[in-house]
Every structure is written in structure tokens, then in C-alpha cells.
Image (cartoon, rainbow, N blue to C red; front, side, top):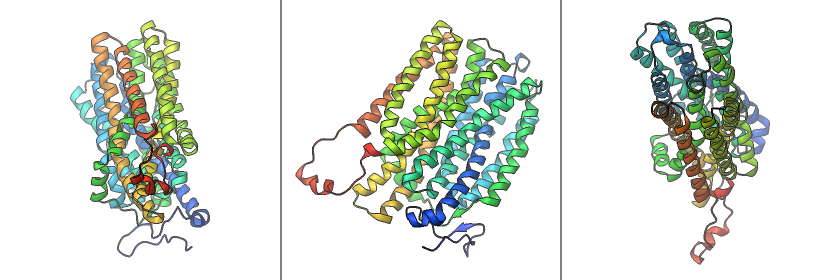
Length: 459
């Protein structure tokens, strides 16, 4: 097996790998694994900072006291709109990898993070209008797109048997950006600094991430999403079914990340410093445990782990409802941290399911070997952007639900009841589509079923 060439393609500049076949075990052990791990490491760094910038306003609103003139509803609306932009841009970011190359787009997308950071630095002061904060906040949403392009890129580098671990690690390392910016904010607030100090720390880090991507990452020449792949993924029912499930896992993670601090300050009367002491714990654990969710899915099947995880998420949410009604801060924080951890496990297991589902469809179509791999990789890469975008919309829903709950009831209890019902729906969908036993084979299908196939229950 000839090692892949990293020389530039004759018609395109940059570091382009001409041949890439991670399913070939010899190639993987001799050459592929080292290259894939190197690209994974620097992809995580860029995505990590992207998440930090995306969730920047979940921290900035804690700095914004009465002198800023914003109500709790204003702050929930602001963070909802930032989440919305992050969800929408995930679609074009997914396909940008094919147009520009994974390395090249990582450089570009990292550099773009300077725009919302510098803009926020310039307006963060009392007297700035809410409309200005809203428009500047919308710019931070582009940080949410880094996840989609990073996941699509890393999906191409790893073989199917390693995707759960690799995608879980990639996403988990990125998700930690939520906790990281909250920890940095805690240090800044504790030292008596203002929001511009926080931004001053992140601006040079963005430059470092872009430079490291330029020096150490690669593009894969034969990874080309096309409009046909996007259309095929959009027409496939599994793309939208998995979007529903991903709303419950990642949508919960990002929505709670934006809202947790505001719930503590508005419902439990915590100061910004007191809230920040608590808010980073949930996102941190939810991020660190995400690779575990992928690993468990690799070992036991993504659908099974997702199903049981939704049971646990519903139980944790029921405890939150009780804690909210009893106004018990210790029980509330404990249950919220547990729920954050469960969203991380579910994030890992649901994303592991995606390549497995399309591989199963390839086998069901009678495709074998490299043809089956190409089919699965083509559609799973295209679907990830759509699923990631729709899933992130769950974060918008969560913040809007909290906004309405506080307007109507003065607490987040009503929102938690709605989330509990949604997790029940996700449980039912996972069981019905991917784990329910099918009817016995008929003579017409016996021949097809005699072929080795990957069951959806194994994805």
C-alpha cells in the first residue's frame, strides 16, 4: 500500500492528500492513523475556540448588571438569537469542507472568529442599545458553524470502527470550549476585571488556532460533498429522525449552556460571580463524557445507549422539576449537572449512529466493499451538517422556553416540564425506529436477509 501523498494537487494549492482509505487496515496502521490523529488534535483546538465564541454571550450577559438596562427576557432573547445563527450556519459550514478542503476551511473559519470578538470588544459598555447588542451577538453565532465543518472533516479521516470514539473526542473537545470560557470568565470576574479583559484573552488564541491549522492539518482530495449528496441526505427520512434525537441531546447541551447561569441568577438570586462558580461544571462534565458516549456506542450499539440515556435524562429532568418547585438550590444544581453529563453521553451515541445507519443502508442496497464505504461516507458526511443544524435549533427552543416560562410563571419549572415530555418522545422514536423487532421474514425477502447486513440496532 502506497502511503498517501501530501504534495499539492496539480490544480489546487495547499496540503492535499491524494489517496485516503482508512478502511484498509494495513494502510491505517502504517500511515493513516498518525495523520488522522494529528488532524483530529488541531481540529479539536479550532472547534474548541469556536464553541467558546459561540457561547460568549452566555457569559457576557452575566457581566451586564442593572446599568445595562436589560431585562431577563431581553437576555434570554439575545442568547436565543445567537444560538439560532449558530444552528443555521452549520449547513453551509458542512459543505465548505468539500469546497475549500478541511485544513483550508479550518484556517478560514478560525480567522472569522475575530469578527465577533473584536465587535463585542468595541460595544461592551453601559449605554449601548439592546438592538446593538443583539446585532453584535448574532455575529458570535458563526462560532457554532465550526462544529459542523470539523465533524464532517474528521468523519472522513477515520474508519467506521473508530468513528464513535473519534467523533466523540472531536465534539467533546470542542464542547469543552463552553466550560472553558465560563472558567476564564470566573477568573476575570474574581479578579475584578470586565468583559473586555475576557475578549482580550480570546482574540490572540483565535490567531494561534488558525496558524496551527495552517501548519499541521491536511485536506483530503477525494472527499467531495456535492449537491446530489445534500439532496439525497435531505430526502432520507433517517436524516430527520436523527435530527429529532439530536435536538434532545446536543440541543439540550447547548441550550442549557446558554441558560444555566441566567436561571441561577433569576430564579435563585445568585450573583454573577456565584452563578459562574456553578455554571462551568455541567458543560465541562458534559463535554468530557461525550467520547465515553461514542465509545459505549462503538461497543454496545448507538441506538441502545441512546435509548437508555433518554430514560436517564427524563429522570434527571423530573428531579429538576421537583427541585425547582421546592426552590432547593443544592438539589437543582446536582440534577442539572447530572443532566449535562447525560447530554454528553447522548451526543456521542447519536452521532455514532449516523455513519452506521448509512452503512446499513448501503449493505441493504446490495453494495459491498469500497462501494458501500463510499456510499455511507458520502451521505453521512452530508447528513451531519443538516442534523447538527437542526439539533442546535433545540438550543433556541430551550432558551425561548425558559424566556416564556419566566414571563408566565417567574421560574423555569414550566420549561422543564416541556423538556421532560420531549425526552419521552425521543425515547419512543429511538425504540420504534431503531430497536423494535421487525416482523418475520417473508419468502420474498429471505434471500436478501441471508446476506450479511448491519442491523439498525447495531448502529
